[in-house]
Image 1: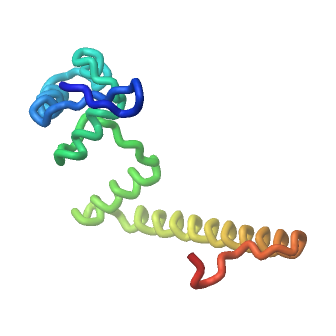
Image 2: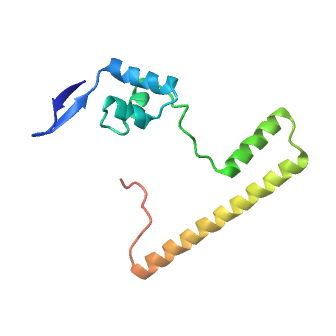
Image 3: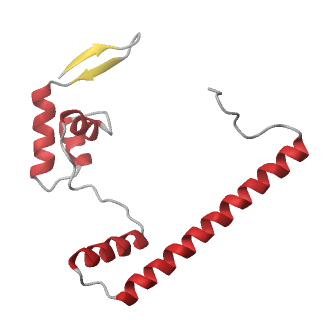
Length: 134
């Protein structure tokens, strides 16, 4: 690790590639957290390890993924469909659920459209983006 000047009186820590890879390997192979390694090695950047992993092409298998429950149910049903275990009743139920979601989204889009029209009329200001504008 070395320090490089950033601004007057400020310095930035520069870490070698070997050091970065060592920290990443320790994180992936052990059961320690990123915060523990940041403190252990005195790394000041909180997102340093994550950034280095992205830079060197590592995947963080420890990081939890947030998924909606309905998405999990959908994926389970898709897997059952692919294996042929989904019943006709389950498939029909899924179709009804998707149709309800589609109807809700159509209503939401129509409501937004009416709100925009009302705002444009009341404020006398065009709100919608015109084509070919940057």
